[in-house]
Image (cartoon, rainbow, N blue to C red; front, side):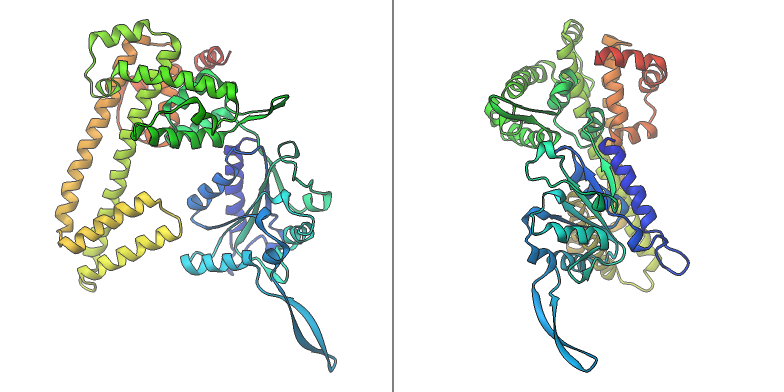
Length: 479
């Protein structure tokens, strides 16, 4: 299965495992809740989906890489206690609480969240001395004499043997006690994630042209060469910051992330062209509806890779605008809820008390990792402004509402401008397939398009994304 399917399977598992009966007992007892074991190539997002799942399911997450642990840190340190059996005093070995178990209780105490995932990465790379402990852990959900708290689901991840020399193969006894999910790399699934997380458009454009370069592992006479999804994503973050600081992105910099000299060289060459296209087209002018005759001529005569680059530049520009819009909408919703809560309770709570409670709730949401740092900071800043500057919350809300409406109008204008430009040049060509597919796959953009009427999007969505015509064009693109 691909990583998207694995994510859905794990979310379904959590839903079932945490289901309770009328007596507040888990319907599937802990001993029958098999640990989830994700096995797949390195760098495809196994660890990352656990973070996404915990946020989406609003449960806790405690992560450990087991290779860093000894038997003592996993099980706890032994100590001797005296006990009495049948009138005889005997010495018995017990254990201090495992660092891993203690971390779960600490997480619950810090966040107030009583259910979650204990995620053990590189679970099949344990040392020989720790292997029996891991078997006990998977079988009985205990480290030493300490059990995993009820409501906490065990998940592990590891790489197949061909990718890691340290891997220990699981025996039948272990495999018969876990839910084994075999995960494979999938460019199309990764592109959905990449579009929603605004991976650098140059990378998306390049991988549309060179899909075989997305995930590549080869061991030849020159040594190990590899490129992973993690490498592309980390490179994207660096590229954006380098560009912001006007630092040159060289082939050697790219090679630090893509450990294949040929692919790094090819990507560096493409990046040079990509930067040129960005300057030549003046992407902001297209987004703002200021399109000169020369831009139409340039687009019409462009090669396919140039057209592809321009499409991804336009998509990136739209995504940034729409992301800003939905960040503002989220803030608007928050401010509305604050006002509603205040007016509902103003007879029993003072304005200052409402502000204090709002600050505390925002802090707890962030501690529980249910909201992003960016969202936490934006909310916190607004609440602090209300407190320190004694702003009128209702007046502030109405003013901000006007700002959000103006931002949405600009997004609609930019979307229509991009469609008009591409429609005049490429009509029903491959370029429109890539553009409309990109819009449909980006999560916030898909919401925006469902909430706003964009006539040309509706036209091309019907013509290009539904039925046999879509399949025919995608087959051409992938050939």
